[in-house]
Amino acid sequence: IRCSEITKRSSVEALTSVLNSETSSLRELHLTVNTLNLTWKKLEDSGVKRLSALLENPECKVKDLWLDDCGVSDEGCAALASALRSNPSHLRDLNLSGNKVGDSGVKCLSAVLENPHCKLDIL
Image (cartoon, rainbow, N blue to C red; front, side):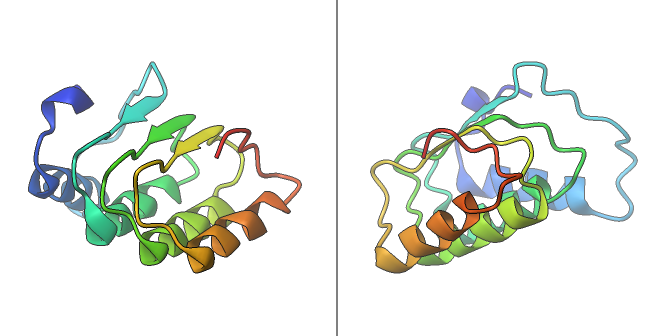
């Protein structure tokens, strides 16, 4: 699956829903590039929450997550922060430019950076 081909928020939501389903027969998903670029996909907080559920999985090896101009607010940042607390060892680059992130979202993400296991270098 090429993320550039995912053009609608509903597509991302459907994908994450299927991958998180207990009945999914998918056993492995190889992201060889380890970069997930969802720039301008208008996921909004609901899509970011679903995506965060995938990021919590210890098997998730995504290193670069680009969510530029996706309609993310403080609520989405809280979900991302929760995912990073659960699985802090892989994500290196989180791009949230062009979103509606306020003080609360920045505080949530900043708190995660205090974890010595957090590998996030670029925020």
